[in-house]
Structure formats: structure tokens, C-alpha cells
Image 1 (spheres, helix red, strand yellow):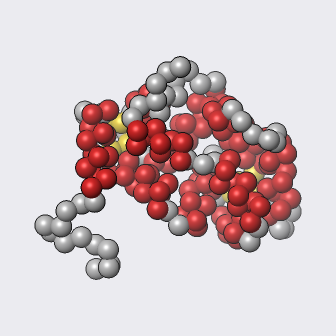
Image 2 (cartoon, rainbow, N blue to C red):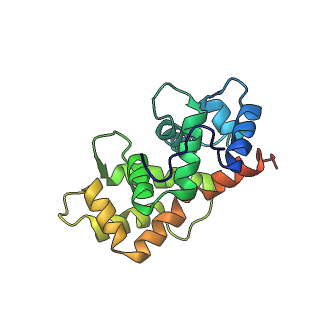
Length: 187
């Protein structure tokens, strides 16, 4: 039994009640579909690239791959964003980039996901091509045009500038703010 495991009768952290009531208010069925996920985050009507990205995020949060995010999956996602260690976040980012699930990221996958993120965030000081080239130039040590999970994590962890670039580019805290404060209002 780990040091942080709760015993029967222990109260869950207060924010858990907040998230649970919010989740059930937004999603009375207890099962969040992709459509409801987009609605919750105020991300309907995105261009096709943005839609691809949101679907990837949804699929990664949908741990049991049943096409819905239930409350436990929702909490796991929030926990990763708030309390996740950097290597956990990097593994998550890797999974997000590895669109075909083959265990490697190629330039096309990274370019595609970064283009999608730009479509959603709408701000960046470099093009998707520049971003992709920098990542590969710095961490594709064997120059095979693909990044393994090990190459990705060790490359990013040993380069502070790259770490900052990746965490800023793929920052999920804006998603979390929406979840914490309530549904984003359409402008």
C-alpha cells in the first residue's frame, strides 16, 4: 500500500467534489462523448486540423477506448495536467504525436499535430515546419527521421529550451482552466 492511498472512511480531497459535481452537471450520463468534450471546452466548429488534434486528446484520455470519457478517466487527465511529473507529461505528449501508434514519431506526424495545435491556440512565434525541424535536429540522434519514446524523453529532458518550447506549445492548462471555471462562453 502506497503512502498516499486513502483508507475506507477517508474523505476525498475537496476539489474532487467540485470536479465530480461539475462533471455530472455537464454530463449527466456520466459518459462524456467526443461531441460533449468539444462542447465542454468550447471547441466546436474547428477546422479539420483542429478537429484531428481534439480527437487525439480525447482518444488518449479515453483510457479504455470505449468512445467515452468517464469520471475516472476525466480525473486521471486532470491529475496529469496538474500534478503529473515531467516524464509522465512527456510520455503523454509522445502518445499524442504518435498518430499511427507505431511507437515512433516521424516528421509528418509532428508537423500535423503542431499545425492542428496552432489552429486551436492561434498564436505561435514559429511555423509548424520550423518547430518540427528544431525538434528533429536536436533530438533525432541517429538521424533516422523517427523519434522513439526514449529519444524523445531524453532529448527533451536534457535541453531546457526544448522543454520550454514543448511545454508552452502543448500546454493543457488552458483546457484545465475551462474545466475548472466552467464552460467557455462563445464570443
